[in-house]
Each structure stands twice: as C-alpha cells, then as structure tokens.
Amino acid sequence: MTEQTPARVDMEKIVSLCQRRGFIFPSSEIYGGLSSCWDYGPLGVELKRNIKQAWWRAAVQERDDMVGLDASILMHPQTWEASGHLKGFSDPLVECKSCHLRWRADELAGSSCPSCGGELTEPRLFNLMFKTFMGPVEEDASVVYLRPETAQGMFVNFQNVLDTARKRLPFGIAQIGKAFRNEITTGNFIFRSREFEQMEIEFFVKPESDKEWFDYWLKERFNWYVKLGIKKENLKLRQHMKKELAHYAKDCYDIDYLFPMGWAELEGIANRGNFDLVQHAKYSGKNLSYFDEETNEHIIPYIIEPSAGVDRSALAFLCDAYDEDLAEGELRVLLHLHPDLAPIKVAVLPLSRREKLVALAKQIYADLRQCWMVSYDDAQSIGRRYRRQDEIGTPFCITIDFQSLEDEQVTIRERDSLNQIRVPIKELKTVLTAKLSGERFDTQPLWTAKG
Ligand code: GAP
Image (cartoon, rainbow, N blue to C red; front, side, top):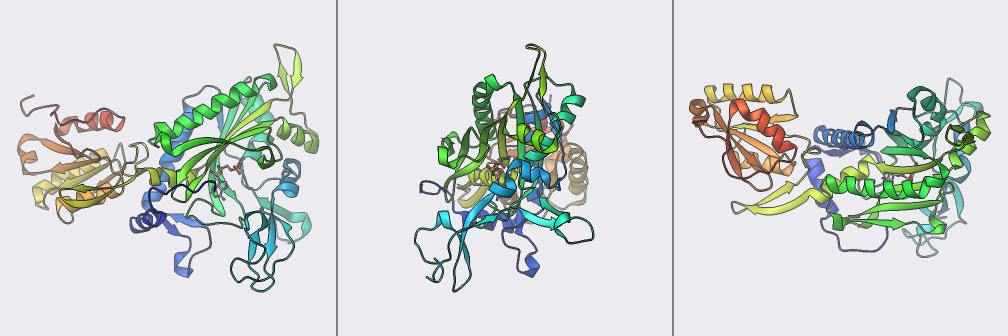
C-alpha cells in the first residue's frame, strides 16, 4: 500500500454485497473459514469468467502474435531453482517471543510485537512457496511446489511453442491459471490471498526492441481496464524503484488502482530481459535460443511480462462499479458493470404470475438463454425486482405486461439511465445484441406497433 488517499467506497460495503448476493464467500465457511482463501459463488464465478474471457479476447483472440497455454500447476522442482524462487522468493519474517505471531519485518513500524508488545526475534527469510510431496513417499526427493506464478510454465515451454505454433519474434504466450503463495500479510478481502488466479503474458522480443515493446504493453494494459469501465482517475502507472525490482527485472511498472484502502498494485508489467531463458537453458541443458533469419544469428529473446490478477481485477471492477443513488425516492445500490463483465446480462420479469403472461415470459427466457446468462424473476413487486438486478449489475431488464399479449412487444429498461424502450419480441435478440455491445440507449422507441 502506498499513499493514504481517501477511500471512495468502504470495503465493508463491497464485502457485504458480495456475500449477500452470492459473489464471494469465505472458503469452507461452515468450518469457520480458511484464512485468506475465498470461494466464488454463482454470480462471482460469472464475473470471474467474464474477466478472463475479456482478457483472453484482448490478449489472444484479437491478435496474430499471441498463442495460449495451459501448463500444469506442479512443475519439475528444478524449475524453481532456475527461476530463483527457491532462493529469492522470500519475505523477512520476525516472530513474537510471547504470542508467537509472525510479522513481515519490512512492514513493521516499531521494534515490538504490534499485537501484544512482546519482544521479536531477529528477521529470518521465509519462503512463500507451498511445498508438497509427489507420489506415496514423503521424502526430500519427492518435494514439489505449488507454482507461485504461472509465468514459469511459459518459459519452460518456449521451445515447444516455437516449434509448433510457427511464430517469429515478436510473439507472446498467454496463460490464465491458479497460483499459490504462503503470504504473511494477507487481508483486504480478495486483494491478497494465498490461492489466486493470474492472467499472464510472456512477450518474446528481439533484445534491441525491449523498450519499445515495454512501452507498448504499458499502454495496452492500462487501456484494457479503461475500456472495461474503470475510471481513468482511479488508475495510475508507478515505476518500481531500483531496490523494489524483483531479482529478474530490468524495469517494472505497476498499474495501481485506487482501492478502498488506498492506491495498490493491480497489475505488474516487467521487462525481464533474457534472465528466464538463460537460466532455464543453463539448468536444463537445452537450447532455448531463437534463430534470427534476418541476421543469421542465434539470439536469446528478451521478455516483456504483463502480469495481472483475476481476483484483484474482480475487486477493482466491483469497487469501481459500486454506486448508490435515489430511484423513485428510494436508495438504490447499483453496480455500473460493463456489459461484458456483468454476471447476468438480461433479467426477464413478467408483471404478474397469470398463466398467459408466465407462458410468454418463460418462452422469452428460454430463447434468450441460448445467447446470454439470463435470470427470471417473478417474486415481489416490479420495483423490488429492478433493485435486485441493479444491485448485481444486470444491464437490462425486460418487462412482460398484459399489453405484450396484444401487441407482441416488451419493455427493455436500462440499469444506469433507467430509460425504457418498447421493442417487438421478434426483434429482442437483435436489439439486445446491439445494446450489450454498447449501442446508445435512449427513450425513442425503435419500433411502433405499426412497424
Ligand atoms: N510473474 C510475475 C508475477 O507474478 P507479481 O507482481 O508477483 O508478478 C502479478 O504478481 C499479479 O498477480 C499482481 O499484480 C496481482 O494482481 C496478482 N497477485 C500477486 N499476488 C497475489 C495475491 N497474494 N493475491 C491476489 N493476487 C495476487
């Protein structure tokens, strides 16, 4: 955490909304929860899937210089020797001699235990990797680690991808997956947890073009958040000071977001130089060079790495989207989520539970579900139902009323403006497709009953 800037939305409000509406629960809650582990509920899992899909689309689908990968979480233990994680991936830790709580030495303000005031031990390095054993025998030879970043899977597969995907420099590998860190300082909800998901790109470039590509990815990644609705003023780029740089990095910027607790890292973008390929070539004895046909030389590419967290992105999108306003004289909580991220895109709301209306509403519901995540709600007043959808960020509600049985039209109501338009049922999918991809929503009816 850096400067203390006034928070815009209380973290408590976000945590409470997430729990109340089924976005995120503490892990294994019936047993009292497991520290810094979280479970994504029915809406949270949709939000997360949408974030990953938007990232994959921008990182892989829309580009011809990127391919995907899904490497295993457990990797050969030598990976972590070569990467420097066995030696270097540690925090300095002190322990209280009275209450035995452990603290990060570099984050402590005083010299005694913040909890009980007790005397502290000398700092010692604590490795953040989770250790386990592979196979039936728990011995040193069978130790493996849960990966603390997805990146290494892409470095060790560099040659495989090069040989099979027929890519020339510059090109990248993209991967989404779980990572694990036995963090000492956790907290702030899903901001820092011990099990989390990363969305990482390893972009391989010619050494002399590293700065150009580094700048390119800084802009590209910053704009990704803005395009998905995060307000520019809540984002900033922060260059790492020399002493902050990870052992592999030549240069690094964080994209910081103004979280409720202050500015903090949302994504890191590093110029890793040739560190990783050189190290893995050395430890594996394999050739990880690239033959440059322009210069007839074997070179070791440099790597630019934009590394984002799915969970941290989810928190940032939720915080940025959170709003409260007055609608029809009542306090309304709403999430202005970008339509691409909203867990539910459309809610189908029949005005009454009369048989004919329900039949039509169910038919529309079944039809729209072929295209999007759609919710059906016929419980309580229409106002209450609108509020329920606003609170989870559903961009559009469709109301089916008795007039719909006569004129075969329904009303679409937009979450942010509260504007409503009347649309023929047969055009519903077309209109929703356009609106969900950003077409302006105004009150002018697009069609009339006559045509
Ligand atoms: N491969 C580079 C790397 O892992 P990092 O800055 O340690 O770099 C990248 O992590 C991103 O992963 C962070 O910006 C953050 O979004 C996410 N992340 C890292 N540790 C996390 C944790 N304990 N909980 C949640 N997200 C985390």
